[in-house]
Amino acid sequence: MSSRGRKPQRANGVHEAGSGASATPVFELPVVRATAASLDGYGCLVDSPEAQAIEIVTWPAAGWRAVDPGTGNQGGTTEGTFEFWWEGEVLHGRNNAVADSYVLGWCRDPAEASPLARSPDRSHLLIGHANYHPDGGQLFFPGAATPFMAPLAKPGDDVRPEDFVCFYCDGSQGLYIHPGVWHEAVFPLAERGEFFDRQGKVHARVSCDFPREFGVYLGFAMRAP
Image 1 (cartoon, rainbow, N blue to C red):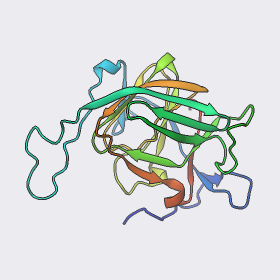
Image 2 (image 1 turned 180 degrees about the vertical axis):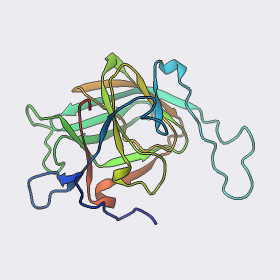
Image 3 (image 1 turned 60 degrees about the vertical axis):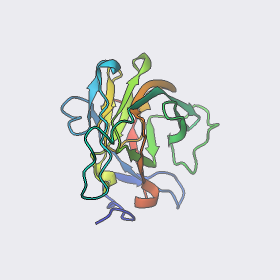
């Protein structure tokens, strides 16, 4: 059965995002430290961006005839700097590898969040979207050894909020994400951050909108577990 339109049960991990009667609930994610064991099935930690190959997935066959060997996977990779910056209570990102910009999250209910807020509390983040890339993997490598958070879920289109785990990475290594793994960029524990990004050049993207599909935002603490 498709997960579209189904809401998670109001369990211990769900709370209100804002103070108003119409506040959207938050599904709180567990935070775990990123290790080789905890990342199994999601990806791996990377010591050097040059040493990490990017998996490229062969274009799927439309019918019973197979894709010819050596074809359907020739798009290669693209790379560039992925920039992150806060404006008040709103987190922005720009992926120069694919020339795209985003609002990635908020440190309070998005309906109340202000880019002009002074001294905002950024100890907790809300996100409303995640995606995966069916064409290839993706590498994030932090500049200046910036620690970061990475909410991930294993492949499958019937993903639900409770399938996500938020990984804390201490900034001494990069993070490689396998093709098909759900993610929403990464989230540096700093006001600004720059990451080296390398990914499949086709840049196919399949998305999940949590407020629309499940009536919640995903939330997680912006700190080490």
